[in-house]
Amino acid sequence: MKKNELWSQSILKRIDPAFQHRWTVYTETLTSLLNKETVWIDCGAGKNGTVKALGTYAKQATGVDVLEIGEQGENYVQSDIRSLPFEDNTATLVTLRFVVEHFERTEGYFQEINRVLKPGGKVVILTTNVLSPLIFLPKFLIPYPLRHWILTRLFKVEDEDIFPTYHAFNTEKALAEPVIDLKAVDVTYISDLNYTRKWVFLILLSFHMLTRIPGLSRFRTNILTVLEKQ
Image 1: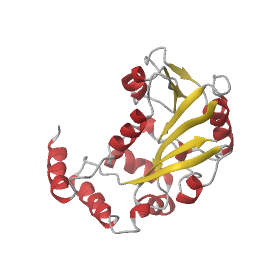
Image 2: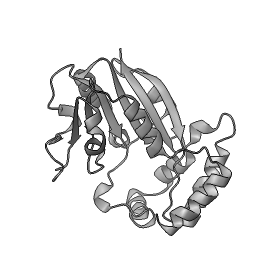
Image 3: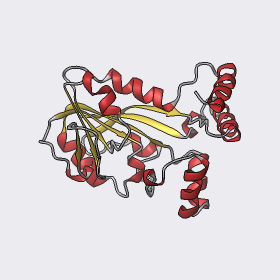
């Protein structure tokens, strides 16, 4: 564990010991839906390795990404989400981890997800919350090339991992409305705390503490939602 992370966690434990990071919330939600009957498709899997780490808990697990996956193994396929290489009504679980913010329009993507998902199947989405001032202010005030530079330098993100964002499905209202046969059954707002730089962590922590005031949690930086096919 790096020095900045140790320092940040020591502060966090004193101020909000019950805090859960977005990865923890996402993983707990995901694993609660995995069992030996689960047919799981992880859309936009990229290099995150979630399928490799948790796929053994499912009957079948496949990672899908539009980019060339590389040496990820036989459980990964290269495909656009709008044209998934699966039969109708085959999956019981579809996950999209920081993917939907890159959908310019949601219709084609969710039509295809709806097609491959069995009735009663779940879609788990972890994404950014465009209603958070930490998301919408940079989006509207900072040109994309500069945002790209900030992400790569400030948060130490690889250049190849940054894609244009549209936020067509990144509000409380959009998530609550049915998408084809998919209806939201759970929505959780999560704060993002970054350990790469101390001053960044302190800004994010301060905003997180502000969102603990009743009614303000909906302005946190991330949303985790579960949709169910009716």
